[in-house]
Length: 213
Image 1 (cartoon, rainbow, N blue to C red):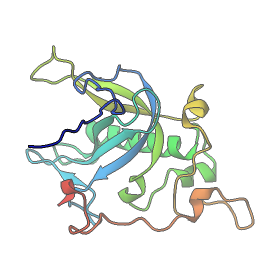
Image 2: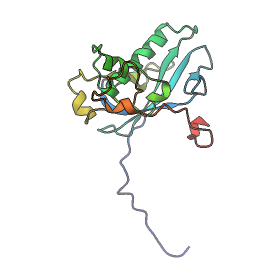
Image 3: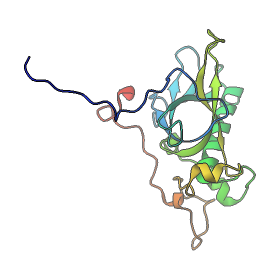
Image 4: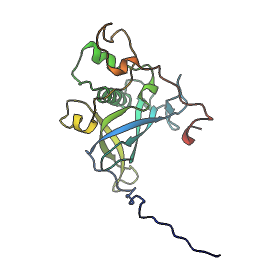
């Protein structure tokens, strides 16, 4: 083979240890993506293969900071193993979704105003897809390997009451939500998310990412 050439990798990113979890308690701004499971009217829900449990199979990408582009995978419970909607698994999932909405839309947990109540309302799980919020990263141990490093999950969504919320979220959040009876009255200054388009179902199989086909 004649000639010679070189490949310069000086501009490549330095390796990160993909097996070392982000330390528990780390706060990071993330963007949420739901991996459609094909269950429910919109198709966002995933059905467990081993029980009656249902959940949202989510991937959160860290937007910025020292852990930027790292991915955190979390199952948000919607229905427990016994098929009951009021069990611990489902309640924790509902609490996390509420926290995500409050964090993304800048609503305090104690705020009971009409605006706040409207901000905690979604038309479907698709409204959560693409939301950016401040997350507290946790580490979940593997039951089969409790001494192992474990894996990262979203432990909680952090709202504007937290001292570091404004600094880590940057500009005021403007996440979509539907107008409704609890929305600001006509003539009032409506928040940006009050004029959002209707939630969309998962993309058709031909245009879906590889994990949705």
